[in-house]
Length: 415
Image (cartoon, rainbow, N blue to C red):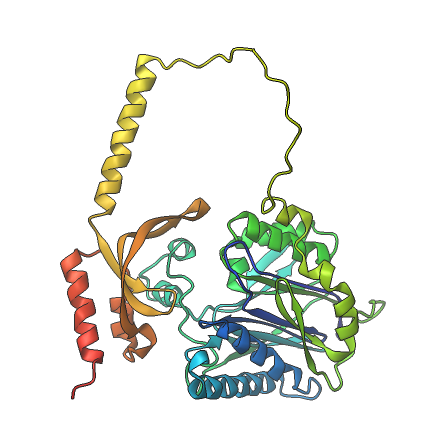
């Protein structure tokens, strides 16, 4: 018996630390996708939009779902690459691409980058895609544990995307769906801020996917909201007695840019009018997400109170403990400042960092950026050499600087 998509929801949010939203998504049964753009001067927005526009032109009917998703990704890659090569303002732009096509009882997937696809089945969540990222390579090589990878400062550096190269390798595969499965496509602004268990709990507790999508974004923002956040959800059920929620394959789907305060959403033309009417409510974060961003409302002044407040007194033992703790922290900080490691900056250039390659909760870094070279990590063709150089091994300053200078000399053309 075939399955139908009986419920769906999507939301995108700029997050708490970005000025613009470079995410884009596509939501039109039986096609769903998330794209997370990258590149300076808002070029990432262009790349992600181009990816979902290419998907909108795809014929969702017929056979060969994996091949069609692969061709869509490669077509988008060619378009993005050609624009980047022909326009200096878009140089270096690219985007992740994770797309799903539902047919019968099968869910076909096309995947490039580190946006993710999850499935919630019988209350348990499972990640169905592998990140194309530097830390994922280090995990596969045994140089990082999965737990270390989750907090690694370079976890957002991807090794594969649409746009940077003239051709791209696209992962495709197919899973068999079951009645009641819930699928989640998301950008790393969600998966990097909320654990898999946290997402599963939200999905289990939500009474509707619309509520779940908003709760996921709220949780990512509550944990720091360091990046743009996008979540696309859909639920499948047996065809018999299921409700019809966009379960008819699209005919003549066309991408429509729907600008909002939180980004650009790719929607089918027939839904554009409804989207425009709902833009103000869909684009604005829920009250729970925005309450901490707004200035507090001033209250009327209260009459001064003369009550004397008791101040706690520290005993001798407590005071000595605090002094000792302060000395330990000072010593630890001094030790951290003596070590260096090599990584990549936000632009993907090989860079020198001082400290330990870890982030603590609440956005506290144990490292600082010292220097960015002129060499993009992607230009190091030897994968083993790149992995050895960017493995975040702790080094002395002289050793780290020598390695970067050697790399720069090797990349400088001889005249």
